[in-house]
Length: 277
Image (cartoon, rainbow, N blue to C red; front, side, top):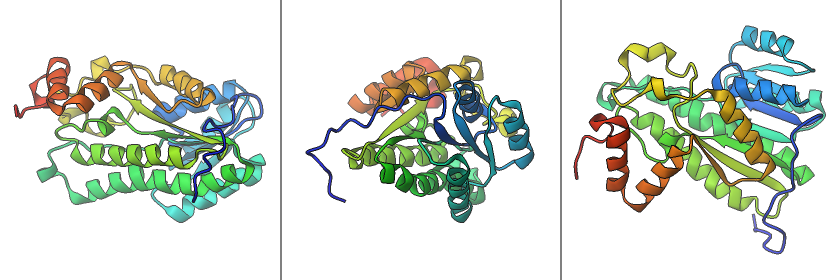
């Protein structure tokens, strides 16, 4: 596709509120749940996409307003396409697409079952790819709207025991950075989100085996991040780092990986960067 350099590079302003049609993947827990609750409170119609149908039905019933429960595994391309089409048919369109679904399995790569590595790749990376691929044509056809890709601070600098998880998040980052430029002049904006440690259920299945550098006591609530994400959408922000220390990590690691390692040793201890070279 040829980029339209004659058009404004800024996407159309999107004010998220009454009547905004938003699809959120990973909507039943954590960041996705916080977003769904905030969007519903602001009067948006929310497509709630996650794997557990019972959780989604209960959430749709609890939220104020009318919303659409979309039981779906984002690792299944056909299921994602069907869910996106179903939401657009029921809501009458799409204004904001949030690719948030993700999973994590931490552990030394040499001991990580390859099936878990494949699962993270399918959900975190391919799930994002399928979601954006299914929803983007609807936004482009109307020449307005916004895409949000929820990556991770681990997509800026990957951590020991999280090599595959970091790789999937880096894939999201590279994809989103390029796509934002491809969308120049189309009326469609894109924001990439880089959360740090957020209080979610992401690691509930592996609490007893997390690496020493993981600091759950320093995690922050997802509700604050949800507010920041919607603000970033309305400003057509390129990216969002939350909490702010994540931006410092990007800067330091971008200048020199050694500087990034030094910062992480101070913040997370020696296991976050055990090689001194």
